[in-house]
Length: 204
Image (cartoon, rainbow, N blue to C red; front, side, top):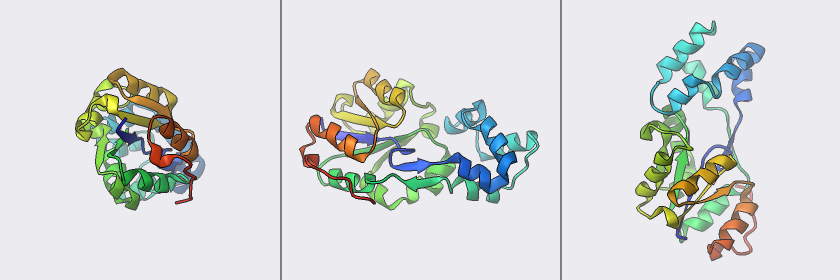
């Protein structure tokens, strides 16, 4: 086992769409987001088949017109770092190739994820909207392995959604459901990442 590929949401950073709803319109925003999160529109957005204009038009059709600037302010404010992960990434980066694989949209990728300082240690990033497929489609895991320049069998992949971690095995990766930084360190140590032996999570 050579490298590690990380999911972003709820692995490196928590995200809370409820915060976005409260920022936009309290109860009305919550009802709107209930119809957006996991909807065909969001899936199209994160697969590169719809853009932000399509999303805003969809909101307007549901009786909730919102400006691009106000939407982005709320949309980019849903993240907080996962405790211990910045330190774990820094530890691995001294010896291992690291990658990022995320189901996400252009705005979250370019306006937030790409600005996160600790991601300088994760030079390879693969986003669903660029690939045109979302996890658990095998094509996106293959794209990550190709971008890493390593056989899939040499990569561990961790995701907070167990099914998405397990799906990586279809292309040969070792999937690890994410259950916190310390648990991930133990699981990677068992796979031969000896630099994490005895590692203790330190808040980022």
